[in-house]
Length: 106
Image 1: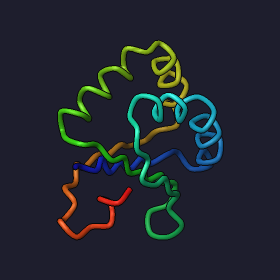
Image 2: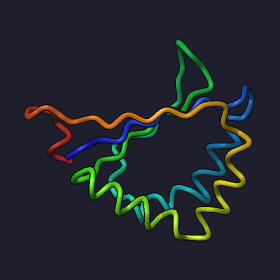
Image 3: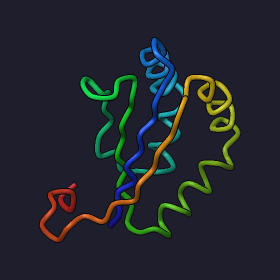
Image 4: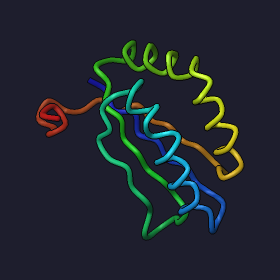
């Protein structure tokens, strides 16, 4: 298993409109294609205007296959066109859980 840890830094004042857009248009597609949402968070201290989300995949190949299918959907392309103006920076890390990590029970 791997976890895709993503951090999006948004323009100040755009977190709520982005969340509304994502929940309405992006989340249903991501859940359909990419599967297991571990968590979706908003920063409340430290660097602000950040969204942090975690997605679990069976393997790197599973992630690549699922994301490739997502990118073929025209609705995802439309969502990206609407979402990109909100985003200042994106980060993505692929994490390997330890043997004793609770994620294995999700």
